[in-house]
Image (cartoon, rainbow, N blue to C red):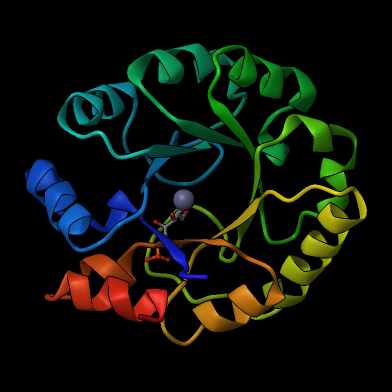
Length: 216
Ligand code: DX5
Ligand code: ZN
């Protein structure tokens, strides 16, 4: 199966976001990954609902919103209204994860749980029927351009085994340090959706970069 690639707009030129989006869409992006950071959950501030709604009116691509914010419940409705197609929330940031997932699902938006590198996959066990995808961080969230943490390969494998044991055939999205050196091992371990920021946007020929990542 051809790998699905989600370019992370965090690595795009923000002063030319529309043309950056167009460039990766023409290059074969499958879905657009939008990193929302609040300066609390992670030590960085990025973009919010205004960017999502601006992109929504500009593109019909799926918008995958990765919320790296404390208590994401407060913002779910706003991101759904802004036009998100998928929203992932961090298990570490939501004391009432089940409720947070229900808020997303009520809006008919795909709900995902994101896990920091040190967070055990077992935290999804009791909400496994409430998630449409799992996002495994392969770096500590907060910044683009970091190095992949090799121990995460084993975690991806464990996550796929857990999902299989529950009969759940959902996407495992991997995020952070995904490039030509790391993507294959992630796929072999069971990942199916690959976020790539610097590996796409730092390349002049983005179609070549995405095709290489896809393995075509
Ligand atoms: C990190 C973000 C990632 C980041 C990936 O906190 O969640 O989506 O943009 O960037 P690269 O691919 O450069 O590691
Ligand atoms: Zn992300």
